Length: 356
Image (cartoon, rainbow, N blue to C red; front, side):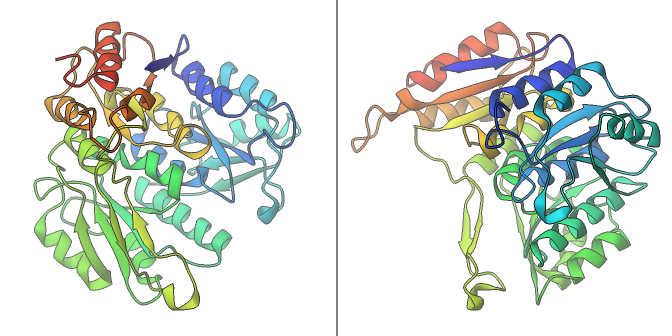
């Protein structure tokens, strides 16, 4: 089955997902913090999704650069975040410098009696690096694993964010054929070597850049990275297991990707052209029905997505009825994902060959 969550605008749609996940009726059902991201710059907004994961336990909401939207303000009041105990009980994070979220927005939030903290940065690469550094401080260690996205191809990075809400791995940028200095700094800070996962094929992130990144550790590409829709499928089925640099000290082994090849799972269906609603929806993979994000167009299910779902719902002898447990969140109103597409997805999740 499928369930659509939407509001009358992007700010309300973001709050629909936080309301679905955080009932906020007591201290156990409130987020640790609200995470504000800029509503007009995807490059600066993407890194903020990684802040969702524990120990922050956060909910992503949208803000304009110079004013706090009414829907966002009301949702912050409803959530009344508990505060992040390992960070001085911060209740609201502002992701990016004042060119992304002004001091006026911060003053508005503090006027609501809430404690704020800013993760600075005057460019998307700086924001990503500073988020990475902040999270390493919270965890007392840099994650060995990190995703690498190209600043010239930001929408291809969207599907990985549902995993980052779920797993909290690193997220850094390259810029065309150049590795920004702040990205080099963060990769070099990893103990021994990093494990880097490139969000895009060689037409997106060149072989030359991949070779340069290899000086910092191991480089792999997420499959089917020629466009955002195909990469969403490639990442939904991708799984990489192995040691990491802290395994000898009893750390968890490296575990990247959903690795879903059978029925009985949840999916988030989003339109990458409406990233403002796709990113807040990633909270479902943190506190809701965990699962990968698959990207669709407003009136079309891309062939790669359709083929993946068709293969997924074919009965298997060991579990012939698992497809009955499939579920999909539809992100946004019918202008973002049409009723026709929702109906097809609904059928495809339930019946082999459905919706074709």
